[in-house]
Image 1 (cartoon, one colour):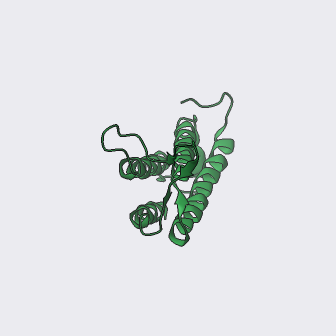
Image 2 (cartoon, helix red, strand yellow):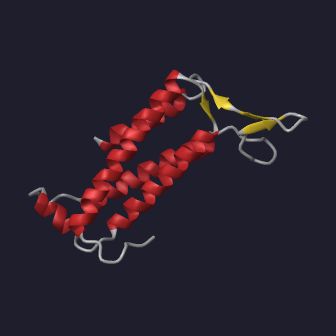
Image 3 (cartoon, rainbow, N blue to C red):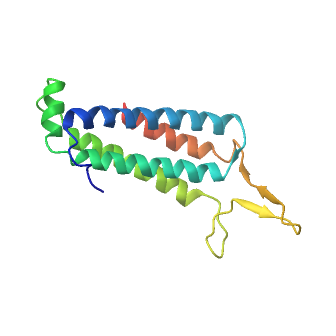
Length: 149
């Protein structure tokens, strides 16, 4: 983790807001898809990568020198706890990613994620999760989204 050289608070804060807006939009779209149709299990892996990238970007933003003072001035709120807000968002994103990891279907012996099966000819069948199987996931997403409000 590290802040790109020369990033200023007035560049970092809009980027941070864009990251949060993007993760919110992606979460809502993915949540809604899991309610409406079967979703390939591999999409949850991509989902986790997106969360990881957002976490990294938010952590990088937290260390931008002068960010808190800039945001407090921009919002005319000298008590705004910018680092606390970002830390909470990172914690909640990390918990959501961990929930997916912990609850993803795995092989009971090896712990390998069950994403595909293969038949004798080598034909791959990508496994899916049904809307019923992802109901608890949607609850976790809703809890995360509520934490952003």
